[in-house]
Length: 357
Length: 269
Image (cartoon, rainbow over all chains, first blue to last red; front, side, top):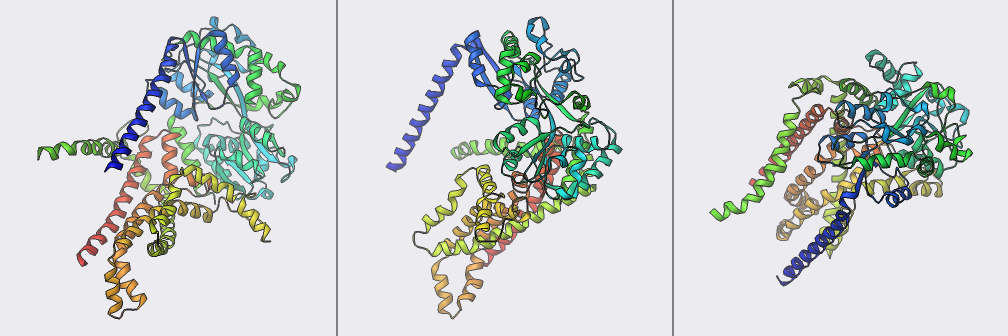
């Protein structure tokens, strides 16, 4: 009994201590409460040094929160009660947030640095005139391969993945849109098709890929490719860069016949509390020196023309990450499709996965 | 009497808020299509779709195999543990892995099973060459069984520990062989534990989804995969809930089958 009593007291004391610590920490941040800007971004997607620099320059305190998928971010913002001042969604999510009136139009007069963005990345179909969004980084979907296990010339195009020589050696990213994009492009269709026959045809085509498919996975692909588990992977340029920095036998290719190009963009939610700070932050990130520093840290391609010039030649001459104009012309962005069409993509994908044995 | 009512308030609230309400919500959601109209379409889709039916069969089949493997390993383990001195200590060692996060354990297996992993290093060392271990049914079953074993051992261990030793002595005194004692006395008396273990393993195994992707490489698809997709990607909560309802029904069936047997066992005692 005595022991029980002692244990209870001990636990209670510990709880009190933790509660007090929490309170103290909160008070500290609340003191600068009015001067706080809350940023909601993907994990590890900004150079922390830049955050400190911004805090020093402006006196704002930056609260940096992260999400791991557009969908989870969207659910959270939709449910309200959040006070994010700046969010960084991908292009098709920008389109949806716009439609659902979750984001505020931008006042371009407050963004003098906007002209540094390369015109080819402005005024895209997902946000005409960039009324709501400013591009942050961009990237592609492509093929990563291990030069010890496969000849680079054999994996320059999507159709080459169907080669029987790659039997049980291809890893796919677990995403319906991306896997279908690959199949749709090989048959010359749009990655945004809403035509069920084209989708069915693409699925039949994918089923023929089955013997080559080793696994359909998400983030784990990074680890597997780094450990030479498979010869070829279909993945995003940003992930590819990470893998390549660990395993030097890996190379990344954007097929010249076309692929997906994606953008992550800075937007200001309607519910933002500190819009002035959000504008300042966007401007700060558009500053060429800062954008270049961020690009060096994150490793994705920057849409900032001036910043690109500040990057080492070795980086910007890399055709895998800054593809030549001829390839760029063939890249397509995803449009936000009606929910029932998205459902069709996913049902067909699920069926493909079911019989991927 | 009033005091009794007072003390049940927290429990009733808990049940209402966190058990009844979510179940009702899932059931309610399952009658809406993606545009928010009330419909029975989700059930029709489920029942007429080759994909979903096969997926259900797959899930049940894998859950059955996982349960079987777990049982075959756990029963002898629990039996032996019961006869050891310091049995509580040995039991603790069996339970210890459950203190570690599930994902962490799964990632550890990736490290063990990959081409350059420990197991393949060992295989190469003994001259068997490296093998493809990840993304196979065998590795999926192995990891799933590994994770579920403590939940099977524990109830069996407890039911074995509850058996009065004098019953076993009596059986031996009356001339039963070791084997007869086991089949006629020990096994029937430990059945409640076995059934509890089956419930604890079979039901979660039905809807495993992280391991199917991480270890199975999505070559093993269960209903959990479909639910995850409907809630996170397609945002078709209605269809996701429908599959959820099907899973709940499946669980009731399992509870019913294993539960009734237990009552009969009680009568015989």
